Image (tube, rainbow, N blue to C red; front, side, top):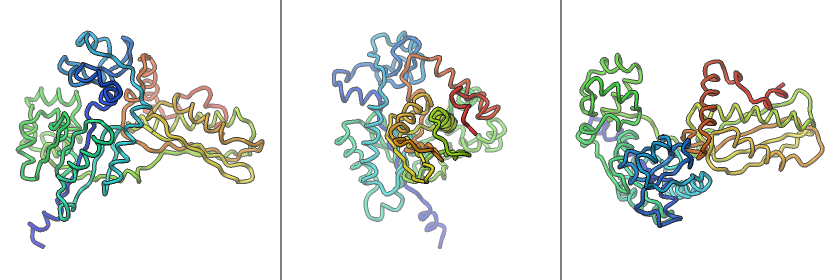
Length: 392
């Protein structure tokens, strides 16, 4: 096989789909009077945080993660709406169901973002035309605006989507990757956060093209091992596969009691501990769960489980409510229990501020502080009082 054929065989086609200003778009779908107005979704008090904002507010410097007090100062005319994650979760699942109905291989990265591997489809159907038709169907059936980027890997496709917004489409063919990336800001590279961007700017590196032309060893010396990954992305290189969504691993934990027990307090304490550990795992991996299941096994080995879908979240105080409700529904006979278990599934990428539209900024700070302690000293370094007793 000659080099030309080998290269062609190795080329991939990756589609990236991203719902435009997702939370705001859902609110506008239900309330058309918000169309064209500056809208902020998040905590409604001064101590709240901006979870999402419309393009109209971004012109004033408002962005997600910003303190609501500052957002109100920058754009006092904005309409502020307390978020409803349960509502957004329903629309997220609707879009995923549409994609699942048509896509050969897809990965759900977050509540509003998907990757689809279309490699090889060009032999039967134009990938761009297929992507366009899928986008039209999503907008028609969900009523939500969505943009896409189509290229040879995840990184270039994601950046292309950003350039296609709002509500647009952009294809970047392999020969056009460098010309497309070079003039863009290094901030467009997915791995580049605020701190890395400032560091690169201090070095006089402003565009992706400037970074691409640097020797990789120089980038590694400045940015560490992560520098090589950033340099590769600046060169349009990304071998990360599209991982099938249906195969995404759930997170679960089970506990078998040394002696069968009917002590409900002790059983609930055990469940609380499992929820606490699993939710900590979610947050450290920057994921959220959209489905919870509880399992019990009686002393006679009869096993039962029950699950329900929830608004995407990663906070144990919210997850524990559902777990306790499921356990109450399951445990319906006066018989000793041998085993209990908890499983989180339908995992998607997401950070805590996405699933808590609360004015309790102290609660966010508390979780951050506890997680920092656990990362340093172990997951049992900080525990709820109700989770300690019963972990035999």
